[in-house]
Length: 479
Image 1: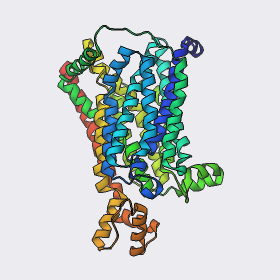
Image 2: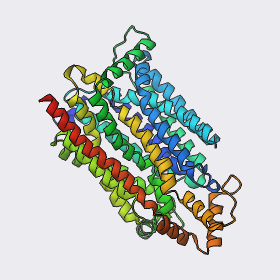
Image 3: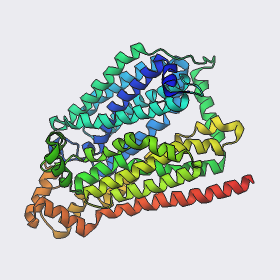
């Protein structure tokens, strides 16, 4: 069947659902890409000045819960209808975005982020289910390809839009995301709910059945081991949002990229640069751009490989890419590393679900597929620990400077609401006889914050090696 005929077979609801997905991802990534720096940045620039450990808890645990809740919210959507639950999710989403900048304490921000995660969790299972119900065997491959393209287009556009207004204050960033969600209130008017099986069981019974099914799948010890190993991939993936924007802001010299755009496209530096440096989120957003450009090429190569080989190779490439992004102060090296990471991401992520389907008993494929969210939950939580406590102790520029100041016995007030991190750095530089560039280089050479790449490398290599032996043992068991 030609591509034109396939496109003609898609009903209007398919296109409406995909457009809703684009705007939802636009709103989500528009704030999420900036969230780590918002949580940990200096208070004098409108950020909250929280610790890396607090950031790790908020982003790691909160995002993990977001991916766990669809087990429940999917049952809610099946019970009460997709369109109604979509409307509720947009109300939660928009009110959460408006309310988030009103809180500036760890507890307040964490609570509001969990509320936002609820909105995302209500939304998450509905659009993918709609795509599944509006495609058939002939159109599902292209249909889900369009769906994932919309996800990445939204993920690419979102940060570019919000970054353009970041200098107006982080509150503006959240309000832009709220405004983008409001577009979906209009689009939902054109959304026609696909047919679904309406069961007579109560919502409590439906949720109970879901957890019983998960319990049945998790009684397979080997399957649990596999899920834990895959969680390592997700723990690395989330460093893209949890750690990399902070690392680039604190350590990487982006002046070469700034000078390039200043010479050829000055509008880019005017929008996404300041004081001779590019916004770190602009650099990280190259990942989404690479996926948009190369996904079809990578998918066409990977589709010929067995799921395990593709998954192991992808995770290995991901490991190398993400480790190298945290290795250097050279921005060109970082961008190449992001490209390497994106190739691994494109190769491995789709194959995880395929491999679950292959190792599941034939009569339990659905049960096992229902657990595919668990590695994301575990990986996000583990990723939060890496970006929080581990990064905070090994690589956080603020903590390392405080350590050096205490070692030298310098008299500088502690960082607080009345004395920002920027003021602390300026005072330390004065007392140590260094400008800020020299101070950064001194801390880099003295404390080697880039050594956190060893942690990422160790986790990824362990996962790849363990997956290899896991599969060998599993195949031997089958034979």
